[in-house]
Image (cartoon, rainbow, N blue to C red; front, top):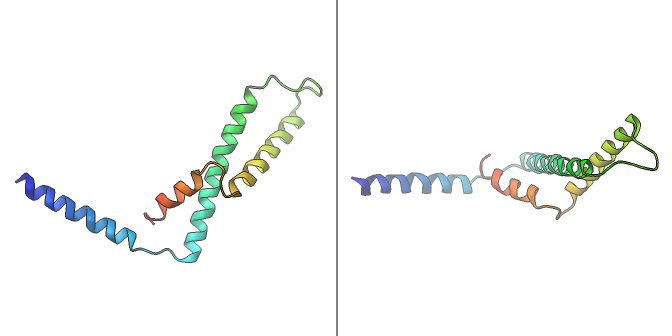
Length: 104
């Protein structure tokens, strides 16, 4: 009985894998998926930047102010957006893209 269950399970999963691999994304969906993966990587990098900035003692020259924290946050956002657009930063966007393109 166990042999039949294993055979059915193997056929079920292999046919699902073949159906998924044979699926092609249209160019619009492909571009949207790439942009979403870039956006996720940018969010991830921004959280890393925030964590790194939290370890610093502060700005001894100018001091802490609301405007400097806003500027720093905007700069971090710009920097992480640009980093995520690069070809090889963390590899997270490529990993996500490769995993998710088979599920759409």
